[in-house]
Length: 155
Image (cartoon, rainbow, N blue to C red; front, side, top):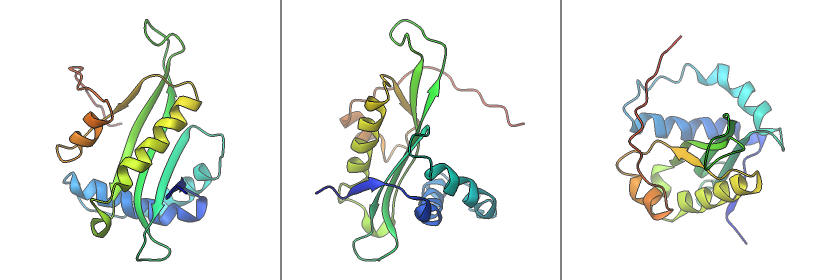
């Protein structure tokens, strides 16, 4: 039996907690003020079984009600091109493991579940941004660095 399961609406607060763990590791400002506004939206998105968000979690083995690991991705549409004529792209945007539950293979198991979820939806191209610490896992899974520059505009 797999330790990995789909995240449920009642997991939303824990999903936000683990997302904050990830953001804090990237030297974010540490603010959690956004959690209250995000929580009801996240609950609603997790309640959509056929939605474009795939969230997979592992329950914490020592802390009932807590999550040990989390992986979240989305399926996006972009106009097709050679190599991806349907234009479906998976994007992994949140991978986190509780500091007390690391080095047990939970993130990898969650990534395997998310990649299978992508495959079931016809996704043949998956993108993510990796920290230096997490990059070896993604390389092991077959991800390759791309030279594409990313520009961002905050509105």
